[in-house]
Image (cartoon, rainbow, N blue to C red; front, side):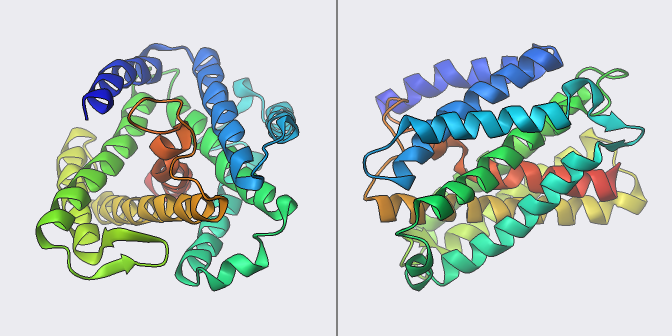
Length: 283
């Protein structure tokens, strides 16, 4: 616990500072570094003897997306580049598929556990949209209100953190019914409900902070609810890949916390899904 606290006290301020104060190009480099570290860990899901080729391929594909979606041309009027929107839609479809993989596990694993190619595709579908979700949300209205996108991104982080905290304490106090016993035996339905309640409390205060108008208030709460639910799915999805790879943590990069993927597993789902909903219904 001491290690966890020390690591969190060091990393959290750095991450928040990067979100709020870095210009977009440097924030993109920060997100790319996060992507590459997570890609290196995903290689451990692909094979028990990870190859550097996975990291190189993931990095090259990210670079290709940057060619088609240059940072200076993310927004075309009030909507982002069509390639970005398409990528976020693909992410939403992937998380629907991931839901099926989770609820049907371990049967579903027979379809992909022996295929390095499929596991690599799953990694790309998880990490590329996460990268672009971070960049898109951070760049919202950046030229007119520099901190607005940072506030949006922090809101998604706060939703996930509130849900994780609420689920932990509600699960310990009231947990009786397993949520996904084949995937993560420690998680309970009561914990999930507790997490949702905490996240909706955050959403209530955020609706006032962002001055959400009455006509969009319902959409805002639904978006927040969906984002919170899908964040739990992100956590469970990483769990099935770790379980298949025989790993407790994605790496030991962060003392007391495991790896980068262990810290951002919920966010890999929450960020692109919230970005997609925001683009279509909340702008």
